[in-house]
Structure formats: structure tokens, C-alpha cells
Amino acid sequence: MTVAIVVLSLAAGLAWWVNRQLEPNRLTALVLDRAGKSLNLDIRFKGTPDYALKPEPRLLIPGLSVRGADGREFLSATRAEISLPWSTIKGDAPVITRIALDHPRLDIPGLQRWMAMRPEKPFKVPTLVDGIEMKAGTIIGDGFSIEALDAMLPTLAADRPAELTARGRLLRGTSRIDFDSVLGVASAGLRSPFNLQAKLEIQHRPKPLNVILRTKGNYAFDDHLTTITHNSMAVKADSPIPGFSGRMFIASGNRLAFTINAVLTDWPEGWPTLPAP
Image (cartoon, rainbow, N blue to C red):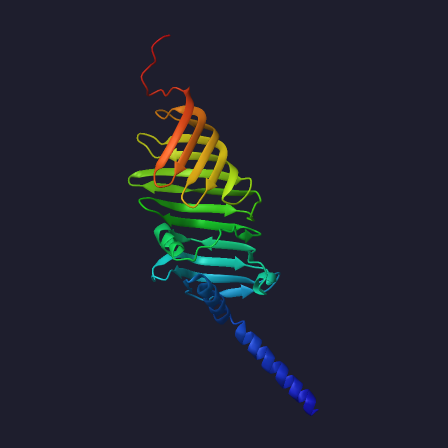
């Protein structure tokens, strides 16, 4: 009888301890603290988080805020959902099942400051089994911003095909371009063939201008040079933007350089009439 009482007491104590460790606020703080220390980030949340353990661990984090070593926030989201397999928790390969962000806000200069302070390591494509989804996002860059960004990347793995769909609104000064695009890469990584299709609506008076872009080529990101080769490119647009098709090469390093070889496929109505041959 005494043994039974002791066993029941131990079981009750263990259940209390497990429940305490898995209490949402405590569990979320523990996970974010460990992630923050490994990445030299200050990761916080505001609100009441939640979690699920089936079919695999999943954290629901309200009021996510990410700061670099300088204490300045460069990433936030009203809500973040992160799912990861048990194997990752146990210390195996760092695989994430899915990331979903509601109303995220990313500051590019802040991200660049954090990346500049990171130890130099070979670039590795993260594995996202069920990808990443972003709703109503905002990206702040140097002299431009992207608003109302909805993006979906169904899956991501090194050297595997990937397809990103994105739509939103690009703002630069008084210019505004609404876009709806699909970008596919043959092999996720620093070098790959790619294809891009995009529908653009340039806000213009007296009416918006529609542009359709289709292009295929190759990209390469090196330490000091980025190159994009458009093996085929076609643009169809409303006047006064001309339609054309051809090839283009872009190189960006200390200086920006490009070459283009194209022919006009449409003569805009707003341009002067060509003389008779």
C-alpha cells in the first residue's frame, strides 16, 4: 500500500512538472530563448501563446517581435505559427515543417545589419516541408516598400524545385505598382535556372497601365557579384509602354551593368506614327 501511494505521488508530481514545462507561456519563452541565443537575436512575444503536440509540435505565437544585437526590431508579426518535426527537437537535421505569418513586417536594412554580424558560414537552404505562407505583409527597403504582400512557398529544400507566388503593392516615392507573380526555380540554391511570370498594374493618369512579363533564364549569387541572365524575355504592355521580346544580362556588384538585345513587338499608340516604308 505504501509503495502504491509513493508511486501515485511520484506520478502526480511528474504530471505536475510536465504540465508546468508545457504551459504555453513557459514553453514558448523557452523555445524562443533557445532560438534567440543560437542566432544572437532577441525574440519576444506579446499575448497568450498556444501549442499542439499532434501530429507534431506546433507553436502559435502572438505579437512576435525579433530584434538584433543593436536592440532594434527588424521583424514582427501579429501572429506566427511554427511547426517542426520531433526529429528537429531531438537535435537532428534542422528541418521546419511550416511557417505562417500574419501581418509580418520586415525591415531590410535591419535584416542586413543582423546578417553582417553573423559568423561567416557556407550558405545553406533551409528545409521547409510544407513551406511558408505570409498574409498582408510589409517589407521596408532603402527608398521603397512593399505592402499588402501575400506570398506562398509550398515547399523548400536544397537542390529541389521551388515555386513562389506573390502579390502585393510596390511603392517608391509617388510611384505605385500592383503585382501578381509566380517565380519558379529548378534547383533551390545560389545558382539555378528560373522562370518568372508577372502581371503588373502601374498606377498612371488618366488610367492604370497593364504590363505582362514572361522571362526564363539563370541566376547566380556569389560573394561579391550577382548575375541574372534572361535567355528569353517578353513584355506586353499598354501604351505608352512598348512591347518587346529578347534577351537581357544583368550583373550587380560594386557597379550595376546590363546588356539587352530586343526587338519591339508593339508600337505604342501614344508614340509618333512611323513614316511609310
